[in-house]
Length: 241
Image (cartoon, rainbow, N blue to C red; front, side):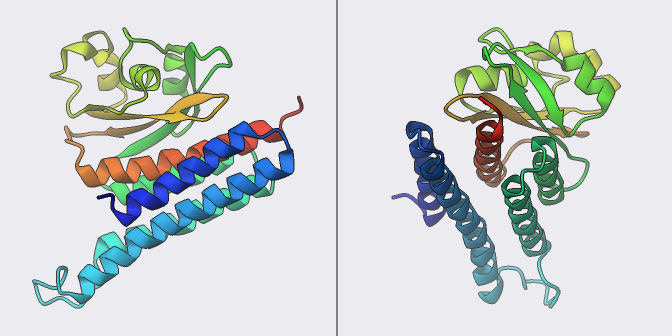
């Protein structure tokens, strides 16, 4: 049986798919609005779950009355998600809206984490950095190949599934790229595909220390990529045809 969180996200995905199937711009807009609302409900539902656990004492074992840190982070994420949707509605640049998601993601994943978004070229053969990492890194990875013989974001985008590398220093696939990881100070690298009907891309999480992705990490990253897909679709819709 699917969880409520999974149901809410699946409804958002279905609305996004329907938006891609229609040609009327007003109907497309309505479907994308519905998708955004389902995702906001998914974020709210996760926050309410934590509140329920707090009330049941799951976060009070130590006797502390302080609000759990995860609840504060989830509230912050919901604000950043809403802000990103508002930016898209107001016609702000895609980079600006996705930057709001980067801030929210870094806050929730915490610690030494950095995050970035990449968007494929129209042919779907290479990735280009949009926002998140330093300019020098963005330039170094510009045009990163999408394909079965790629790694990280290039492979995740190709196969449509996450590529979760806990430690690039021990993964043989990273041999040729370890110098880049050392230069920009990261060991863990998680890559998640982003797909819309017309474009694809990826979302990446980089951590300074080796880090295994938990089920909760993957679940939250899926919420981020679904949100990003809506923002990207809205951005494409606003471009002159």
